[in-house]
Image 1 (tube, rainbow, N blue to C red):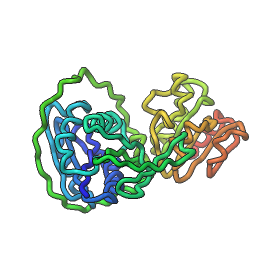
Image 2: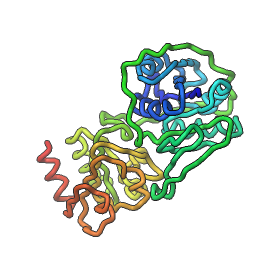
Image 3: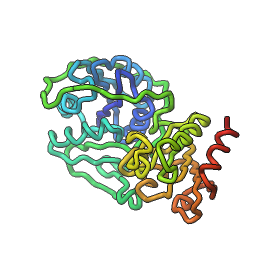
Length: 309
């Protein structure tokens, strides 16, 4: 079977981690063709061609495909869909915007957040904040699937797939770019970081959240936050980890002042090692933590940061 994988391309660069993990999942379905598209995508296509397990790379460059607009991208994918049984992507913000539009245009269902491939038409995905696994069998002629990358290993580099340049299709004109507002940061990207330090409501204020950032910097980590911390204005929305935020699975996850609501656990419980710091010894977070410290975070975090620095 043939699989078309939409690569994650941002400002002309390939998001290697998300794309390589999606390749691992897609390769179980058949021969994988990767689509890199954007106003600039040639460099991304070259990078994708080096991932093992890819048969071919398609590169589409056009101004209409820039600025992460979903409608022109969906139209391009649909124009290519005739040659593929599966259309897949990593379950990122961009793919969650694009794939439902693709599925609607093809009049099929979209199967989101797949955590395991059972067969070419059967998939597993978490539901109820990860407390149950749903098995979905699709009878649609084309399967549109997004993969939860935290549950797949990244495909290795060292491949040499051929790269083919293709033309964009007519822009549907349903949306237009106005502006991007991007927060600059030297820290690792949250969903691909090897270490994540997250703060919760217990941190108490936006000013005190600086403690979390200092600890993260000492560990070379990305910064996360619970929904309670985000809703309280302690941290920006793009730091949110959980069912309604980002799903992470780092080698080390440090939860500070986070009680451990199931919505938050759904976004980080696949982490390899979980460390919890909370003064409430009955906090649910300790039930999933590999290491727990019952302590006042305002004393423990500065001391830990000092020792790490």
